[in-house]
Length: 149
Image (tube, rainbow, N blue to C red):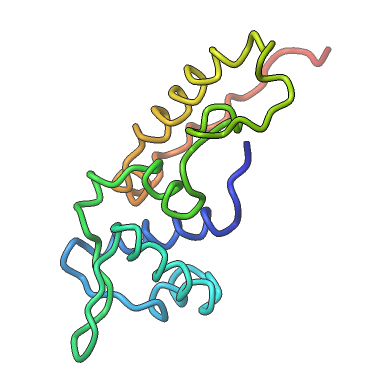
């Protein structure tokens, strides 16, 4: 599984927004400048994130975008689904999809829901607050004192 660049950019932009605080009014231009996401892409994503309910927008003087919920209440799964749509590892876990030629005899299909649930749970367990926090320090590399093999 690989997320699209749009999803990656959305995570980067929302992380930057979260670092500004819950009440900060932000523009696509500001977040584009701060993150390096191209402005047209930032504008497109801000609209999509607002439509999905992750951002609120206000027009006019003092307008802009704000997070719709506290960063701790927005998960990575929420962001992925806002950009990519529902998380589904295979088509057979999507409601109403029956386009697989192996579906009738497939012995794996009953297990895909558990896999899908695990992936969605893992993404749901990571909050925007965590993603916006400074990265933990990387431990110093251990010095090799033995002989090479």
